[in-house]
Image 1 (spheres, rainbow, N blue to C red):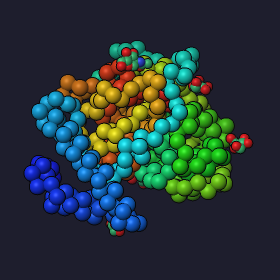
Image 2 (image 1 turned 90 degrees about the vertical axis):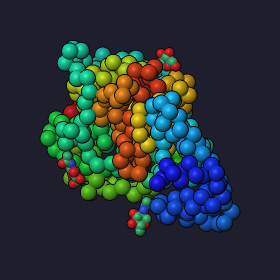
Image 3 (image 1 turned 135 degrees about the horizontal axis):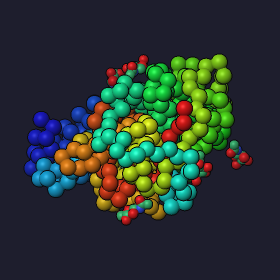
Length: 327
Ligand SMILES: *[C@@H]1O[C@H](CO)[C@@H](O)[C@H](O)[C@H]1NC(C)=O
Ligand SMILES: *[C@@H]1O[C@H](CO)[C@@H](O)[C@H](O)[C@H]1NC(C)=O
Ligand SMILES: *[C@@H]1O[C@H](CO)[C@@H](O)[C@H](O)[C@H]1NC(C)=O
Ligand SMILES: *[C@@H]1O[C@H](CO)[C@@H](O)[C@H](O)[C@H]1NC(C)=O
Ligand SMILES: *[C@@H]1O[C@H](CO)[C@@H](O)[C@H](O)[C@H]1NC(C)=O
């Protein structure tokens, strides 16, 4: 039905475009302060619809490995979706000597940590640039499952409030935020549970951590060698999920299915703007992929997940800044 609508759109634009817009607003509870803003958002949405339609035609013809769909971001502009962060992969240091490696024959060809019951449900960071907090929490939760057989939900707000007292939800991703966050959990002797310290999606400016409510502690963390997808595979396949800093672009945000590969999504000197968790890897229809858990709710991608290209020159910088906890 959706596909039909998209095809027809080319022939009878005005009527169906309005229908598609109305349906989008209804599905995602969108409302706009002024008619002028609504008109602007509608134009943004229709542009995006066109892009999606073009991409899906390429996908149907086998010219591209992924398809796209409308989601709750469809009324945001390219600029709004790809806010720069100031993190540059090339500035990130070399391999950490303590990084654990396994023999290659122990590394499985594919893994999905969801099959082991250690991946907590998809969360939604909402109106805060707190992806780093969600990604670290998601990673530590998974390692709690693997190494302590505990299903805990940890507090993103604890991190938002306490890792950097100057952090504000509207600011771009800070260089080194993932390391700072792991270091905070180490130095702080733990992170609270989400039940005791729920997510608020804005900054209160006060750290309300309580040692009575600690849900997890970590002994340390490890940096994977910059850009080393083999080492990343070894770690994900034999140790567990990994937090990664990546570039998300305009196309990425509308991903629906398949293996996301975009030659314009650079790995170096590109401005990284998002943090996610790799929870597995594999091969689909001849395309190697990383299985990535996002924090934009289940509306995004495949119930909140995206498969991103693996072994394609570190596309989107997926292996550039990769860190995982030692439990
Ligand atoms: C929209 O609002 C309805 C009713 O409040 C709610 O059930 C639904 O989950 C909301 N949808 C989204 C995408 O937030
Ligand atoms: C990981 O890399 C960052 C960035 O270069 C560095 O500041 C940090 O000390 C490293 N951490 C470890 C545990 O090696
Ligand atoms: C962990 O707990 C959450 C919240 O109670 C639940 O939704 C989820 O299914 C549980 N996960 C596992 C693997 O048991
Ligand atoms: C917060 O910002 C102020 C003023 O810019 C600065 O003096 C202070 O050191 C910062 N604090 C932290 C924890 O970064
Ligand atoms: C980045 O991608 C280029 C190809 O676009 C590749 O040659 C290079 O090895 C990659 N660098 C890193 C650090 O992954």
